[in-house]
Image (cartoon, rainbow, N blue to C red; front, side, top):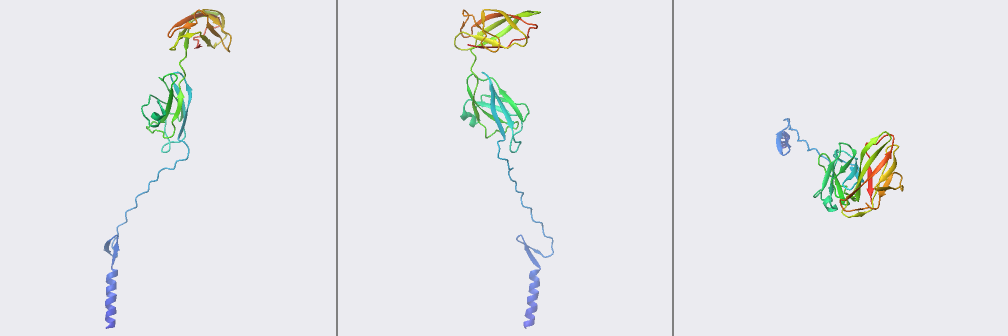
Length: 250
């Protein structure tokens, strides 16, 4: 009686061990087991070094332009690719929100370069932001305020009316480019060679400076907005210059 129970128990044990459970399904032992599905790959964001991806600053200004010099420190995904676009804004709030840029300009495809944005208003503050060729907007730099130079009170232009071996005659026009009348003006420049003023008319030579200069003759000192005065120069030289670059101020 005891012997028979042992046989039955052994048989039952064989029957039970002939099956196994895999992933909730019962399959015979020895049958092919399907491979487990691979775990999804874990994508990690890139580890970027703790430096600004780009730096920039205003390095030059005129009455109608600002020049921004930039340096790209990091490439994507941590940084930017050139060319770089500089966008100018009328206020810091607009710049922070990238709202209503008043002017833009784009660099050449250089990692270190300059961008000059023109068409600006004289004596006006601007803020700048940077973006790259793919339209990625820099999150860190809100540059400014940077102010354009004031409109010069006057301008001066020269024309060489006659020239010969040993000298030339130049006619110079001074114009009030401001919105207010001016009373008195001074024009100065640098010679390119051995030029020397022999005489001047409608202007008085002014030696207070490192280069040649003249000032008004008194009777032509007052200029209304848009008004002009003309003076002449007789110059001795071995070779007449092609142009004369002049500066003017009150």
